[in-house]
Amino acid sequence: MTTEPTTEPTIDPTGTTSAPTIAPPFDPELAGALEAILEFLPRMSDEALPALRAFSTDGMPGVEPFDLTAGGAVTVQELSVPGPEGAPDLTLLVLKPSTGTGPWPCIYATHGGGMIMGDRRMEVPNFLPVVAEGLAVLVSVEYRLAPEHPDPAPIEDCYAGLVWVARNAASLSIDPDRLLVGGTSAGGGLAAGLALMARDRGFPTVTHQILTCPMLDDRFETRSSRMLDGQGVWDRNDNTYGWTALLGDRRGGSDVSIYAAPARATDLSGLPTTYLDCGSSETFRDEILDYAGRLSEAGVTVDLHMWGGAFHGFDAMAPYAGISQASQAVRQEFIRRALAG
Image (cartoon, rainbow, N blue to C red):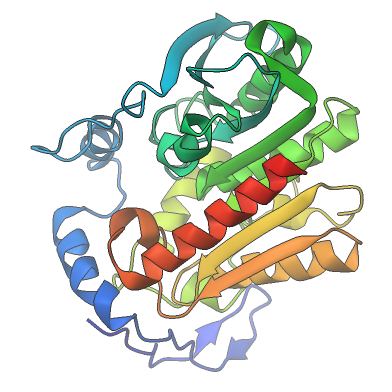
């Protein structure tokens, strides 16, 4: 499968006609996997949402459930903790090394799913290796989903869980001075929002943010936000659906918080050391590259990786492709350096 350039000029949000937006071709090894993925997954819509939610939580039919214990190297606990004021309690999934006593650094994970699907188990594979090796505790939060629970419910849930973890670090065998946040796609956007919120509210201190292909900008002002229509995972239609579910009529307007759409933040100073990655052929590419550049200009240490020919979420959806193996290795190396620092 190859991407085709948009043949008609596009209109940017100011009404100015721009040149056609051209999507780079997909990596040949990924292209075959992408064809199968697009045949299996429906596009985002109200009608498709129940099935997509079931798939995101239950997994593919016939595939064995993911082993959260990593063969016994990890102990698993679920906690019910207070949510934001006036909101329901939250469920936190806590994974600790089976041996050792800590205190360990904590990775606080926010799962992906376009703000509309997924659950607390979804982000575990990205961080389980370091827990199994005895390097960290992983806490993954179950936040409320849009459209039933629009902004600010998801980010406020995530923040309430992070605050609870920081205040109860001793009972979790966690070092409260070594808190990392991380997530993929919508989870990456929530992690970026958490870092901003923790900075602005003065608690807790976050040392690193691990933002894997994060969903950062509701405004659709970049070339890449308009370059995929049916050719890739999470195209313009899917992105419109997800952001509208979260923000409703506010999407793209002036009344959107930086914690919901971190790309809107103008002051990025004082944020933690950051890992960012994206594919060259995905909707979020340009907003991620811009965010990385502005973080660097604000004095934040940034590790940025763009993978040529990769679609959104490629390393999770096609994990055995060579480019996926490379991206996973680079991210794991960053996480280990962060935990050792």
